[in-house]
Length: 289
View: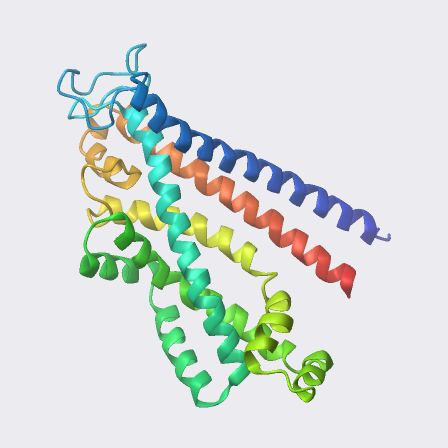
């Protein structure tokens, strides 16, 4: 019995392509919801997320409130929709800052080496060994509530991952002949890092970015659940799940279902996108080899 490696590779690419497409569709829907919801609230089509004095508390889903209301009479559907924009905003800011900090540090550490490299590796390895949620909880407690503070807490958590990946790739690529040729022609470290090394080490960053974004959604939800994420006036899935915890045993399921489902689907979409990108990058590496 023989196996057709080409058909196996083709089925893998097809599956990864489907996952990436589904991931892009899910993320695009969340982006669309995040953009449209504030406009609908502004024109009066949807109520404000914190407006609930005129509504009954713990009202079940109905035509007036599609996802019901919470213990303060606030519309669960509107809060879940606005929570999409808040989650995307915090996660996008966090992973962007992590890339802007981790990638340059990893490139400089891998290229320069020496004491500078050993010092950075020690610091990053120390941060990397700490549990993600524990480190983010400590940082969020020290920084306080707020979107920039939550993004900063998440950023510090993910910087070591970009640093480790980029540093290892830089250390391998700097030994290539084209780098040695550029160095012999008088090119400086900044020129070599920008012109020759960046394009060779940046390929794995999008995959890691989507994976970190999916993980950051869960960590942000955990911070909100613990009351350390965002201010109480900001709609956030984790804080809504915390408020719904006491009501679930009494049969009030809608206050926990919709925020939890929204978080799950977004993480699933980002994971699909990351898996598809990883398979695509692996396919490029195999074809190049």
